[in-house]
Each structure stands twice: as structure tokens, then as C-alpha cells.
Length: 168
Image 1 (cartoon, rainbow, N blue to C red):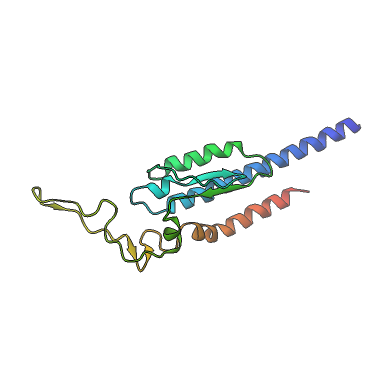
Image 2 (image 1 turned 180 degrees about the vertical axis):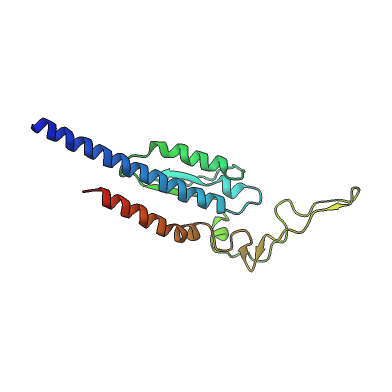
């Protein structure tokens, strides 16, 4: 009888641990994807620099430039190593990430990094693309991280309530 009880306790513990790890992965993937996809894109460098840390905060600056899907996929792949009790972090080390999040552009940037393109022979002039207004990114004037955390708070509270209900 004691062996059966011990096996049952172990089995229950393993199920709850697996659920907690799955919840951690799902919340991390969802929040990190939202942050990455809200990151303004000019060259793609800021989006390409989001890095996952498990029990660490990555400090390197990547030279990646892309639109977000590959970055999200790297985060998802990295989360496969997640274990119960691990902490996850999303970090970005481009020098201007703080300005994208909190504002502070010294002047309104009218053109992206490519500047104004024109081809007079073909009569084509690129439209002006306003990149910042009042010191804030025009694409993400309220930041990416802060707004995602605020938007996500109700979802996270519901997920935690479900987990609490299932744990005896």
C-alpha cells in the first residue's frame, strides 16, 4: 500500500511540475512574442536583437536584422530547455532600445535609416516617413515592454487563478 501511495504522490507531483513548466513556457512565448512584434522596425536591428535568457540576462549585442518571426522562433526554441524553478528574461542590448521604450529622441526623425530615396529618371520619390514625434517612436509611442505587461496582466491573473484551482 505504501509503495502505491508513494508512486501516486510522485505521479501527481510530476503532473503539476509539467503543468507549471508548460504555463511558464506559454506565458513567456506569448509575452515575448508581443514585445518583439511591437518593437519598431526601421532596419530590423532592434527586433533582431531580442534574446532569451534562462536564469541569466543576456548582455551581448547581436548584429541580426530581421522583421521578428525568426527572433520569436529562436525564443521558442530556447524555451525547450526550461525547467521548473527557472527564471526567464527577454533582453535587448542595442544602444537605443531605451529610447524606443521610453522616448527621448532629440528631434523628430523624418526618414528611416535609408533616408529619402528618389529616382528622378523614373519620376519616383519616396514618401516622407515620419519615424518619431515629440521624442517618441511613431511606431511605438508607448513603448513595447511596458504596454505589453499592462495589456497582459489580466491574462496572467486568469492563468494563475486556473493553476491555483487545480493544485490541491
